Every structure is written in C-alpha cells, then in structure tokens.
Image 1 (cartoon, rainbow, N blue to C red):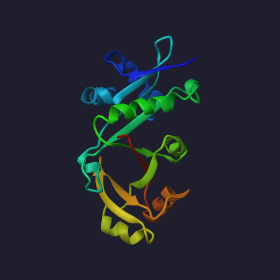
Image 2: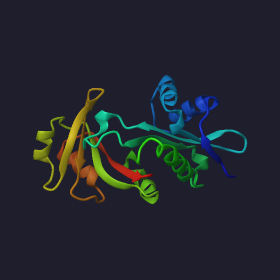
Image 3: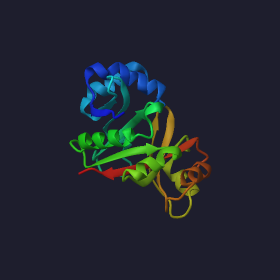
Length: 201
C-alpha cells in the first residue's frame, strides 16, 4: 500500500508529536515539536497512508551559527529527524520523505546535513550523502586539549556546549568502520555521530 508524501499541515501536528515520541527517538516535549513546526513549516514533510493516518515524517531547520565549526556561514539545512512507523519500513517511505525534504531544503540552502548513528549510516550513504566530520559528545570541551589526543591527520574543527555538555567537531583523516568509536575512545567521550551532507542545489 503506497503512502502519499506531502508537506505537513497544521492538522498533522498531533501525529508529528506522536511519531517523535514513539518512533523518532525523541524526548522533545510536544511544545518543542510545535515550535519547530511554527518556525519552519516548509521543512516538515509527512507520509500519509490511504486511510489518512500519518505513517512517517521528516523535518529540519536552517543550521544555526553555533553549529558551524568551519566558519562557512549558514549554508545548510539540518535534518533533525526522519521517522517511519515500523510496519511501513522497507517500503521506500523513508527515501521518499528524504527526497521531498531535500526539495524544500533547497529553497533555504545549497546542502542538507545530518548527524547519523552507525545503524542508519547506510541509509544516508544510499541516498547520496557523504561523511565530512564526526560530532563527539561529552569530551573535553577544549579544542586545544582535544588536538593533543586525536590521531595524526585528524583535524579538530571546533567545539561548543549544548545544555551543559560539550560537543567537538572532528574531521578524521579518513572515514572507515569504527571511526566514530575510535574518536570516542581517544577523547574519553560519551558518544559520537558521523555528520553527513549532500548538495541539493
């Protein structure tokens, strides 16, 4: 059964909140989801089944200045989340949501960026995304100290604090299986996600 992918509407908000809680790995309160939608409704897309039930969503926002470790400016849209209910996975719904999201994102910036955990990296690679950095969470917030701890060839791009936790941006010398885990070990960090990006215009 094919789902229809379209821009989100105000009436979809309850479904967006439910998807965020149950299938998107988010603990964001309902009001946070509503605020994100109100700020950038054009960057919310949904997949709707034939019976009108929302079975997937993708949303994001223009990248904030403090999220730019390279100093290149706000030239990207960040994909915050893509979620599909379990019984509609493996039907291509996620790819269609991402393609629709990219179309809308192209009106804001020339590329889309996303932080991906290991188990979903294949999805972004299959959709044309390329790794460019690793976001390391819970490490020493001092970039100078981090530079002394990473391997030769790795480049620490910068760091910041979010809700009291440090985040470092590292450009590894090469991307291979286990790169994020290696940086977690080297920096005595809590976790790390690979940052992917794709040019959309």
